[in-house]
Image (tube, rainbow, N blue to C red):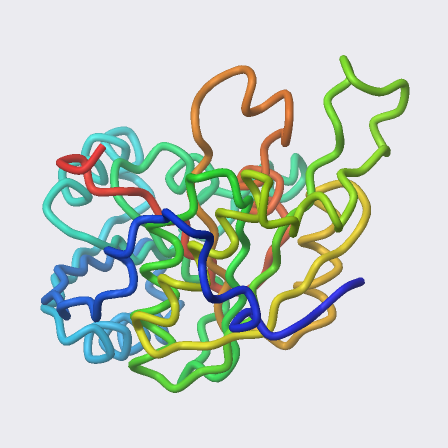
Length: 272
């Protein structure tokens, strides 16, 4: 494991866009909370807490198990009218428990906006983990991390996931991109990490940068299990065979085992 202050990655590379260094203008966010398990009484006050942090407005919606047939359509309609969907999963059926099916997985993967799967919510936020791929697709996740940590005063840890080399370049899937390559200022990943550091600096947020070796999904598992995080933030998967070949899928596997709130960040439809 390698770690250090993310602030050490600033200043950014010469010629990089300076727009991210400008102080962001706070936005009034629209949040929607879909409550699918009435036994999870902590979800509504958790959503209200997040709404207060973001100086936003909250819409509450209940959904019963017998209405599951129209759930996808309902969630898509709700999601398109908000910036963040706080989703309380329904209780697992016996069959779902046997098959290890998590009801919130497909919702988080396919939702057209950012979604927070509220598993075992706890607040106030004190420790937040931001998982980045450093491939150019982390911007929305970084924005959510900046806003929430600035408003809550939480400690931020940034885990830069080092991908295994594609099969076409190696005989073993376990061959890793070297840390010197990942952080080098003349590489794409190095430039992206500096851009992320600049984004966070604009929110007056600093954090601890962590790097692990191993398969990407296990890098995340090790860090989540080692740190007592109140919230994990990651960008939604980007489409494209090449991207999935290089890094594989992270969000789906993460949703199958994580037992704490997970925010899957996606750029608003108008920005995509």
